Image (cartoon, rainbow, N blue to C red):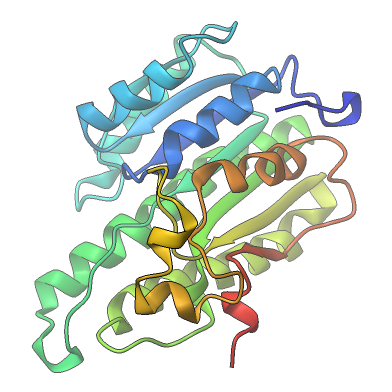
Length: 256
């Protein structure tokens, strides 16, 4: 991915927090290729290993930790993660939250435990990391926060009420923090995604699915579609954009 000089992340330190989706390795690659040093916080070891492996070909002291920041003992998970981070870095310039645990069930069948678990993974984890990262960014008078969300933050879907509610909360948090922290030279934006796959599936094969026919561009997205946008939103060039969700979804969010 060619990186324009004004989008360079050389000298920047990024935290990438992920619940383990297909996009995380590609997002980490994009940050590393642009020159950032990336520290990964993953909920599970396989997710951490996959992201670190994806960055193995890029210069930088990339590392990470396994920590369940969104769990009910999330404060302990956050402390563990930040202790590991502080042992290697003295500042955080970029925070990328990729916390999208998917869940689908008819609304009347959702248990309170399922609801609370999903909101903790998707919303509480992002809240805690934004709070911790934000404090540091306020002190240093600089920061870029990017929350990766689903297009369901602004749309409804059958059996998707719990997940959609969590994504709407993240979008609202993005906008509120942008307003609150703008005076501290912190930009807070969101990347909205649609249906995507990390597999290389021919378009003609994809179009056999009814779901794909609903997408205006008639094919699913790939994680690499959002890498360049992430680099821009994480860079100093992103100076007058804040509080914005940018959807890379093949036109889904514009669909009636």
